[in-house]
Image 1 (cartoon, one colour):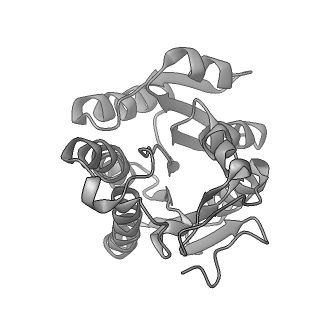
Image 2: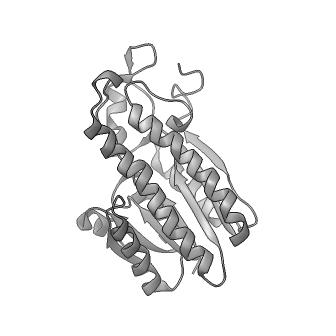
Length: 244
């Protein structure tokens, strides 16, 4: 076996593709997400643990890591992937409820999962492990009308850097993958046109989500004395470079 991985948001999209790819590569994988039924659709074959999890809830996150340890005794990789968004909304119309929904999942959830993984990786023998955070191209270049998503993804970069710094003494590596327009149910709207920086709407190209999964597998498979600190994987012709 290659190792033990925890994948959050594993019931669909990027999380499902990464979980399936890690399983194929020989990892034992704990699948975390809100809905058991979608996690069970992801779970195929041996070496899978389904753990319904609310990443915004501290007790639920602890239960996820406790269950994984009880099953396999250690955790080598966390793909910190769970995230959410709300419909495009100008900042002046953005509600506190919308803000809280995005921040709770995209920021607090990432922190809670990273903290629990860090504790496990610090204390296990052999010591160490790898945390891979799912950022976004919005971690560096925001889209209009998405203030909470943009803010949380910028903040994920700060979490990644903090974990990298504090993990050195324990053999814990942390990197971030920033994804642009992978073809998933969340990005289906791209083909219908999305808001551009100049206020117009335009369709955007997408790429196969398997490209993302292969990139995460590469990051996860490095020895702990090497790290991909930041990686951007995107549809080649999407409007990112020069956006705005």
